[in-house]
Length: 120
Image (cartoon, rainbow, N blue to C red; front, side):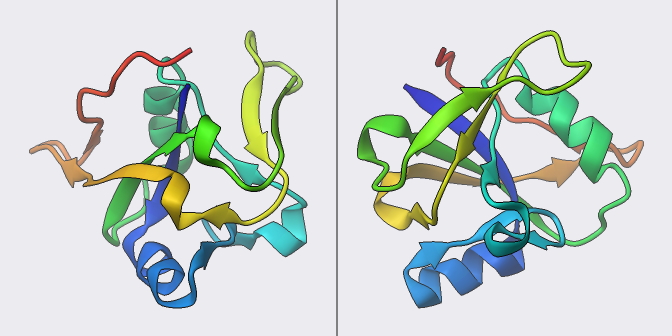
């Protein structure tokens, strides 16, 4: 199954240099949070709008194949959310990332989510 993570381009570049992605969410490391935040295909747009609206630096949408993960992952309930979210409990191995799409802003300055495959 496929799950999704919004990454800063700089964090993704650092991961490609080091071999593992260890950013939980913008400005927070895996070590600080204890897991890496991801979303289902139906949650990715809302995550982008809620947490990344004011981000001006380049962003990437990572598509992660859960069958290729080397760290454990699970769905966790989030208070106030109608649906659980996927979290990875360890570094994200680069071989599990099956696509990395640069995100762009539209004329109004809002991030545009590309068409993503239905996953779960």
